[in-house]
Image 1: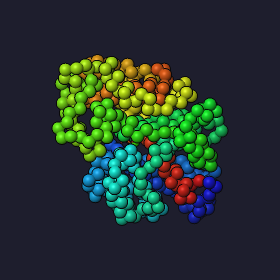
Image 2: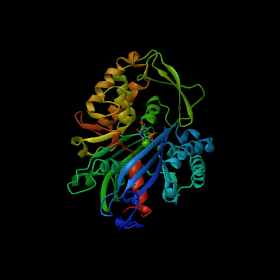
Image 3: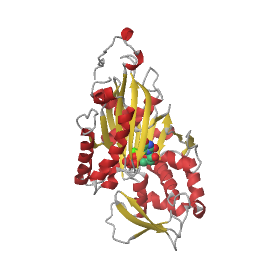
Image 4: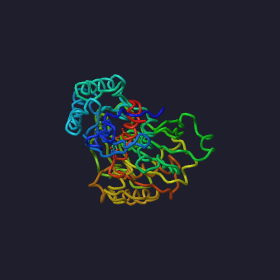
Length: 404
Ligand SMILES: O=c1ccn([C@@H]2O[C@H](COP(=O)(O)OP(=O)(O)O)[C@@H](O)[C@H]2O)c(=O)[nH]1
Ligand SMILES: [Ca+2]
């Protein structure tokens, strides 16, 4: 796409408040499987040659996600309206009409029937149309899995300064959601391009450059979907009262869990085995042979966020506010510690052992990372969330001709 200049209403030297003429906003909703979030970004474009700067972000979230309202689409849309009302206060009224609002749904809605997903999305569209903001075509929809990874890659590499200037040393990213998981990186070796199935490679244009990225979204491999798969309950018609058991859960546990609008009963192996070893084997069945393993990633380091971050923070592997640097084996060590002392960790979450074991198995046996592969756990860079939403907002502004 060609670089386009935004109209300048005031030449810089006569602009009354110089800084404000080139400020603009973008509103992006992330309708995830476990929650809905609004990101209201403020951008400043100092000159047409430079990348826009992110001046600030307002972030708020609600739970549960839209997919939990599969049978009450109006209620689902109400949760979006609550968040959108925040934008009315955040964006100056004279810019409302120029501020685009978009909602992209991810794996939660991908797993619903088309009919239920459409009903939810059309209610949300109505909420948008009743708002004073700019509602572009296709403003509400389900995002393609490959875009989810690419846009998160754009976000992280933009925030870490890798998309501007010469010597670009981009970083790969790992996102672990509730229902799907993404891996994205820029291959450095010809071999990788040759060995990779075509649908794992996508060319993407951003900020006047084309990137050929390796990316894939594995539907059903998010943390919560993996819990169901381990229990043998994923995509199953659940019979009333049916109990799903696992060696990854505390022996005496019996409880209920709601996900994607379905109720599941689950519990520990009352009589049988419990602990890291049997749990690892159980989880391995869910993962083994299901993921593509690019050779190149074994020796590189990756940025990891979402549930990788949350579980690492929950178990003090990293600081909750600042994040940290880990190796894959740190997750395994912690999984052993938790699974082999399950009763002690019971109070935090009954799924902690299963979650840590899943993360370990996914990284090692799924993607094929080494024990000493380095992971940079990050929630925010320069106070901006490391989410695909920033990349998606840039893409949106580019398509509207508001930036290049
Ligand atoms: O702005 C966000 C959005 C999501 N998450 C994390 O993403 C995970 C939930 O995934 P999500 O609901 O987005 O599921 P998906 O639809 O991506 O499978 C949780 O760890 C959240 O804390 C986050 O940290 N920041
Ligand atoms: Ca997500």
